[in-house]
Length: 218
Image (tube, rainbow, N blue to C red; front, side, top):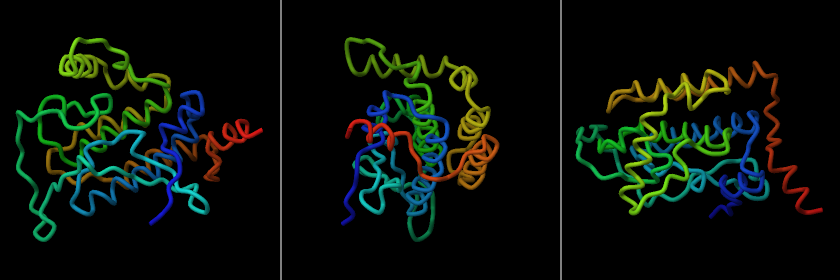
């Protein structure tokens, strides 16, 4: 069994709840690979959030792993690749903060939902918080409804304002996918790799937390 390091949520907290664009893009490249791999096994994760991505340890300290398949579900038959049927009136599954709009609307999840959730994680890393955080309510159900309402009333452009336009393009693409469509993961990776090259970054695994953790050790 591989030994795993801290979660991305832990590292985000260690970096005072802000990741640089370079770190976000280096993470996005690996996180998209991990989600694509899970989907290639006919499985949906259904709880994409920073706590469920961890860094490796030792020689694999630069590698991102995806964990916690407690809410995972098969979206197609492994042999025939027949997709599960479209259904609605479903309960919210996963973490409301990162849930897709369709998840809030009670629609059966599919590959597009894991990807939309990943988009919210990437924006959380850049912004430091999401517009629907900190909403108060008497019950968890009411809080989930408040989050859904705020999320649906926040335009993609508003959410991604001040950040490269490719993040808006990412969300529009995810939300344009039909229920049983196979996402073009390579296209999404190219989107972010384009930003990476335009900014002149080097893919050197020099993540923000490397310096933060060194400061904590001294």
